[in-house]
Structure formats: C-alpha cells, structure tokens
Length: 105
Image (cartoon, rainbow, N blue to C red; front, top):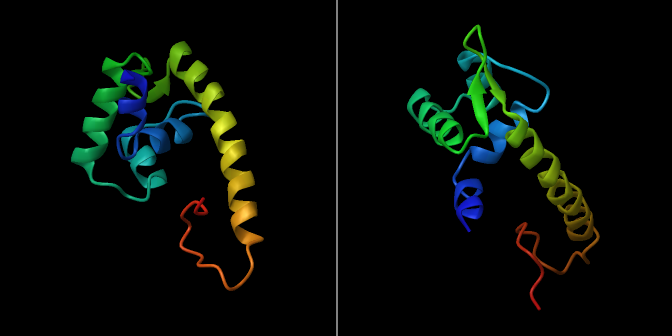
C-alpha cells in the first residue's frame, strides 16, 4: 500500500513520466510539469529520492533509478488502460454526461 500512497500524491506520476527519457535539471523538469511551484517540485523530488525511485546524476540532474525505471515500465499498463478508457468515454451516447468520470454501474 505504500506504493499506492506514494503514486497517489499529486505530481509524482507526472515527474516520473517526464524523467522517462533521461535526466533533467530542476528548471527543465519544472517547465515540463506545467511550471509547478518550486517548493512542490522539490518536495516531490525528495519523496521520490527517499523512495529510491529518483536520484541525482553527477551534474545534478534528476533521473529515474533502476527501481524507478521498473516502476515506470509497470505503470505503462495503466497508461494503456487509460487510453482505452478515454476512447470508451468518447464513444458514449451524447445524452450521457461527459465529466470524465467513470461510467456509473
């Protein structure tokens, strides 16, 4: 459950997504994350470092650790499911609400 608590924190998954292709410095990462506040980004990076999912390289850029890359690869299944879900929501009849919420059972 600790992983779900970590991944449920705002911006954590976005930061991991942005680091998927390699290291980024603080400012470029902040820009890719829609300019989130410096304090929030710093806290989330600290959270990810403490969880051993992100580390700083020799020049000070942030990158996924091997464990972080493993987590990213596991999360890709969720991305694929999310794409299917979005497509299903787009196919709803027009008389159904389009709030982006899951369909009611």
